[in-house]
Each structure stands twice: as structure tokens, then as C-alpha cells.
Amino acid sequence: MSNPKRVRVVAAAIAALAVPAGLLVTAPTASAAATAAYNGLCGSGYVVVNSAAIANVGTVYLTYNSKTGKNCVVTKRNTVGSPTYMFAYLNVVGRPETEAAVDEGQYRSYAGPVYKYAPGVCVEWGGGIGTWQTFNASSNCGRAAAKTLYAGKDVKFRDRHQR
Image (cartoon, rainbow, N blue to C red):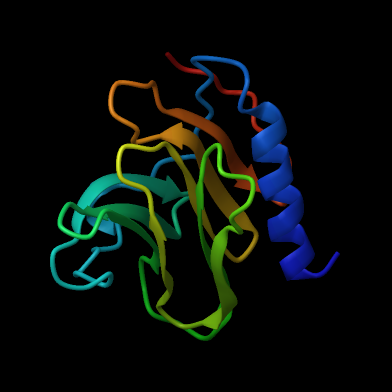
């Protein structure tokens, strides 16, 4: 399966699994010392509102700009290296007429930024580095509970549940 198809398949899996409430699946967390720094990659006015480790290889950041109403996602590697497959994914929940914002390719440091206008609306977001991926659905929408639906390697769902 090619990488663009893999992102679409995983995004469809997120939509199919978004129904169960309170489901939380996480990837192995990176140590604080190894966490990739956000470094303002989305631009001026964006504040980190959520993040998730991608195994021990990097972090995906969800940011928000309250002046523009836009969310932004960036996937950042812990260390710059030779180009490897990476992606950043962002979609608005409940708006099937809009396409997800995806940046994917062979990158040395980070994928993204990708943007979506979503004030007061839930978003799905995630990222991947190499074969490791992390996705979150129905998160950052005010009082609604965040659900990490998938985090792992090679589109195989993990079994660790929390919350």
C-alpha cells in the first residue's frame, strides 16, 4: 500500500472508531529529554494546545490561533536525520464536505504545517514518522473528552487502554 493510501486508510479507521467514548490508546512515550521541540513552526500567534509522542522518534503538535480560528498540526522528529517518510494530518470532525489537510513526504526534520479553520469545533489530528503513527479524534473541542484512537506501528492497533 502506498503512503498516501495508508494515510487515507488510517483516517477512515479513525472515523469508524470515533463512536466509543472514553477510549484512549497510546504509543510508548518518549522521555522528556528526547521530546522534539515545537519551535513555533505554525507561525506567529499559534499556541500549543495538545501534543502526542510518536513512539520514541518524535512528537506531533496541535496548535491553535485564537485570532484566526485556525488549528495547525506539525510532526517533529527528535533528531534531524536522513530523509524518512513523515506526515502531519488535520481534519474537522463532523464536516464531511471538507478534505483533511495532509502533508506527507520524505523529510529530515518535520512534516507540516497543515491548517484548518475550526473555532469551537472538534478536530482529528495526528502524525507519523517512519512506520510509527499517532492519531487523535474528537479532541480539543471545548468540554468534549479527547480520544486517542490509534498510536502504534504499521497500522496495527495497540491494546493499552487508559482513562
